[in-house]
Length: 320
Ligand SMILES: Cc1cc2nc3c(=O)[nH]c(=O)nc-3n(C[C@H](O)[C@H](O)[C@H](O)COP(=O)(O)OP(=O)(O)OC[C@H]3O[C@@H](n4cnc5c(N)ncnc54)[C@H](O)[C@@H]3O)c2cc1C
Image (tube, rainbow, N blue to C red; front, side, top):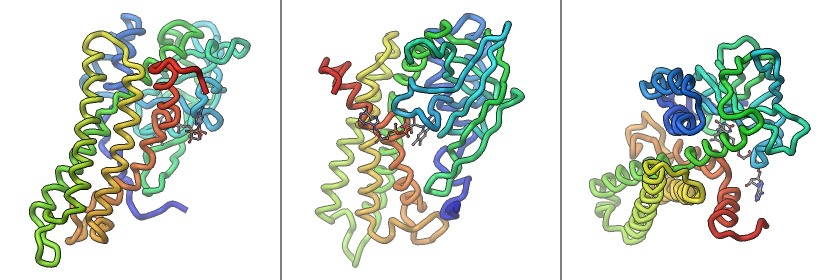
């Protein structure tokens, strides 16, 4: 049964205009792989925040082993006809467009028969079902494609070479600035709270254990920020970050988990109070952020997958 602890307006990706998929992921990918026509059509609306994109990668049977995906795109004249299903698709219920990884050659080795296709969410045959998360919020969805026709001009890169387009996009997705930004915002509000509040008559900021924890988290959040800035710097140089993005993702997401846990720990029972409660520190945002933080080491590739990437591509170790 759906939890009513938090409502949709309070869910993590609450702002309809917050299109991280278009700005952070699709736009830099199109700048590398897109045709001139695709750049003209898609980049300007993305930069103006006029469209919402979502990412159709994961499937019910394909997550970490993404190249095993089964959604099919069959060539038919000037179109592809797409059938299959995607899951965990963040913001699909508000999206105008979706970037889909689909199998165009079922006989090729699994990484080589995949294409990257842009699909209008209003196309006949696309349907979206909500998947509620443990905060009670609605971020995820399952999407079904039932004979969806897409013009071939929406293919990004070459047919059957979409895997390489898709992983380039993942490298941009994993830049990780949102993890450090959320960590820093939560920490800064928490530190303000500690400066201003008293516990049993004593200034909260004098608590030795809390001071140490806040300091540790502050160092980690600053480190996460610099790792994310390194990724941004590489993008600015025209380089595609790879192990650097994975390092930023794994460290940023795990830092955010430690920050939300620290918030819960140092605020004691007050940390569990929700928005609207007059005693709730940080406007009651701590419980939601803590619960949602569990997903950060899964989304965009799990921490285990990131460590595998760093080990093999960064440290040149053989695959385990
Ligand atoms: C908040 C959130 C948002 C998401 N948004 C989207 C989205 O918008 N679009 C989209 O396409 N997907 C999205 N996803 C899905 C996400 O990409 C997958 O959940 C993720 O890739 C893991 O896949 P899985 O859930 O199938 O887990 P599995 O792949 O089944 O993994 C299960 C466990 O096995 C471990 N494991 C698997 N393979 C290995 C290995 N080789 N070595 C070591 N350990 C391994 C994993 O680390 C994990 O702990 C989202 C997920 C979350 C949590």
